[in-house]
Length: 285
Ligand code: NAP
Image: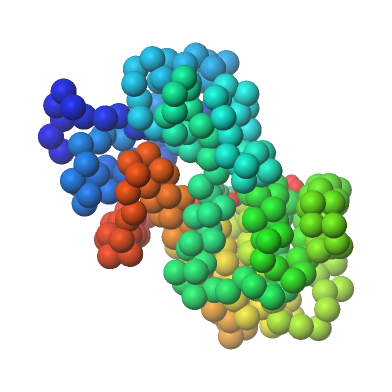
């Protein structure tokens, strides 16, 4: 990387930031596309978020990613917010515009592009979402435009109920049915695409899955775990043992980064370059 007077800077606002893989994605994309850009992590304390966004603008920073715990709160400090990000209520990408930054959510388009790349179809599918946290809510909002039926199972059923009410009001139909996690045996006797959005099974708790019963997995033709460390979660093992296809969340991470890079630089990343970054990401896990 040749840093000089024309180098544009991008980075990540988060707290903590030291485990991020985004510098790998963006600095390698800069190398592949020949764009003079450097990407850095910026440890940003919650009480300094507004100062960080204003300071970044003053320093002519081209774009930023935003991660935990700032994805919702950053919206108050933006010049503009993309409609999808506003609907999801979370922003992970800031694009420099006249007078400030415009907020986007590239996590959900990233998941969508990852699923397309893996050959997973969403249209006319019955989908089971495990979890009802921030990511599950965003997944349900994104799927509202594609799925035929969604069951959202969560340990704290009230959270799934709130998301269901919100999405159902938006689509004006009972698309999402909330259930407690323990009620998985009440699901219809059919085959599902299951999206695992809970923290259960993340490193170092690699032997755990949110549901262990093989009877549940017999209903899953495809299981998508948003966790990427470990590369094969217990959930994925259980899906495969029952004869289904299983994927992890690394491609979602890849494509949320690629879409952010495309927004910052007004370029289109080829699938060939995407694969190169993916291969490097895989070996870094
Ligand atoms: P969150 O808001 O904290 O939600 C966590 C969810 O996990 C809740 O539904 C929670 O249930 C459930 N959960 C936690 N511990 C549990 C347990 N012991 N038993 C049953 N359920 C449990 O987190 P989030 O922001 O939605 O993130 C969720 C996951 O998404 C993360 O772990 C991360 O791996 C993944 N993610 C992936 C990407 C990617 O690029 N691949 C990006 C972002 C996030 P309760 O509501 O009952 O507490």
